[in-house]
Image (cartoon, rainbow, N blue to C red; front, side):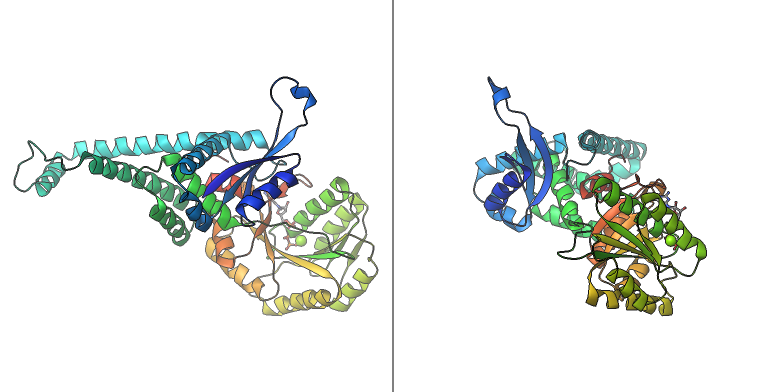
Length: 425
Ligand SMILES: Nc1nc2c(ncn2[C@@H]2O[C@H](COP(=O)(O)OP(=O)(O)OP(=O)(O)O)[C@@H](O)[C@H]2O)c(=O)[nH]1
Ligand SMILES: [Mg+2]
């Protein structure tokens, strides 16, 4: 992994410089304004600093360029880890920085505590230690151990420390309900690439970055090149589809001054349609109940000047094939007539096994991105990573409360990974 900073007049300029040097596959980790320093600094323009990271393969070639560069990379990694990493400026910068700042300290403290506990255990079992000592030294010649190579011994010691550190991160991930399979996969890669002199903070930054890259990026709802973008929200009952639509609609209408219309194909419950109608009234946007795929096409025809048409669907059991295939009809007919996107809404507190089944079943009807709701109701976010890696489909938004419009944000992998590695929420 390479972590590097680029400066430009704008974020775009700095990113372009980074891409020129490191290629397209880089990941933007932090964007911040930097104030000019020195005399007459008030005459200079403000600049934007973009911190970027580069994946494994490229890192190898770059690291081969020599010690000087490696040192620089380690230094930057350290600074980045200390200062905190951010996806974009809209997030609460200071709080995320604080969280990252404390992560390393927290892990080191935990490590020391584990060591102390281990030591205590051994002290309490003198018999066991004695046996082990004997095993190591069958001839009983411990008085003057032959030190073959102090350097090699030191390297072994460091390597053992690193292993403990990696094990601690592994346990933290498992506690956060990351599937063992994925935790192993990620940590094995890191384990292979470490050297005895790799510092802890570099290992941590490497694991952190790997999981961020595993999460990938999502642009969420994007505007259509022409005409309206028709966006479907699908998913099981009660996960928060309608509430999420209201939150997103509100941010488009109020925040971005976009023209939004709301449709509902949820005709199973009168209350469901009424819920969305109420939000439409508050936002003063058109609303319509749809009873068939043909009606959907007609409604969209009449909303050509709109930017976003958000379509609510009825929640149902993912095992209900009849309803699923009906939903598929809606999506298919619309794909031919307009630009569409689909979002599978999942609740973060649904059981892992069920999440995978739901995600698999809905894949039959649409090529969706993910929205995770109710992350305020769970303390473990492992399922976000598990479902992402199982499906290979990005997470676009997360919601964290019942308040419309506030309790939603674009998914921020950095923040989630920080939590998965033991940082506080
Ligand atoms: N705690 C919490 N509650 C939420 C969140 N999102 C939605 N809810 C609540 O979850 C309940 C169900 O939300 P709805 O939006 O009606 O869910 P739905 O998926 O449309 O449900 P159906 O239409 O019945 O399938 C409501 O009480 C919401 O207020 C969230 O992020 N956190
Ligand atoms: Mg609903």
